[in-house]
Image (cartoon, rainbow, N blue to C red; front, side, top):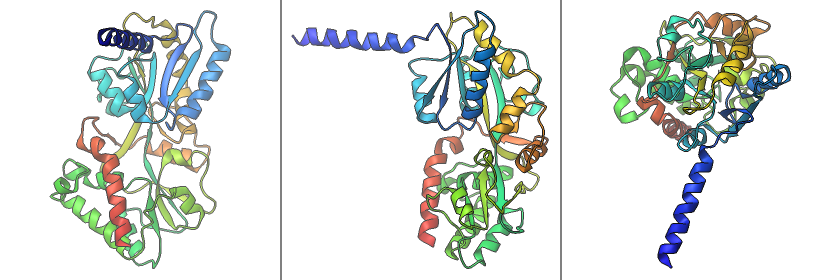
Length: 346
């Protein structure tokens, strides 16, 4: 009886595995995380493509996963035709030979083109998310100056979507940022930035709780570092927008990409047709700007303060962290730890 049960269990597992490998032959599959900043704009673009696609071309079927971790885990058992994700995953898949050439050769800037082997052929960067400064009053553009002002404010003054990113940005010019206090404490830039934030928090000038930064700004917080995509729906009333001063260092960015990940034997002409349509003319720049991202390709109009600033930042050098770096591996845990430290200092 035990042997029979084992055989039945093995058969079920094999059938589940086979089912996970299947790709809907009646649609072009595109996977993404539900919180991806490009998803709303890309969903609208896919709907437009489906209404105008040529006879015989497959429609685009978008499958959303809870978050980036769930999306990455799903790739262990199946692969879609197209994958919307961060450069940290897309470049890694390309380096491992898990992407397929299927689209138009696009003229990406050298700073992007040189980052991975398949750029413009199997990996198609769309736009970059960066920290921007939103404020209700005139403020210094550098973090040290903001921390000094926050320490003198006598109340909550400054918040950030990611303190890990602020510390990584500060450490870019002086060695690798590990997102590990025991390792990073030897980095002078890290120590100075950590201490500046800690002093401001001790004086009550840092808002480091779990409340969304935009809601804090809407409630009157004077200043905050906000991810650019969070501002796509508009600035809080009475706020101004500027780019943080990086001290001539590259600007830390998260580059959102479309990667062609179809398994061997899957026809590529439908993915190629969609990519040719999506990346034609100024469509990719408009897509990026709608999502609050710095466009990776030329084009786009500065129709408002956010889009104008994003187009200005397109000429700045951007830093794209390696997917295997300690910073990427430790970022989430470090963020939680650092926020706990700031809360204890209040």
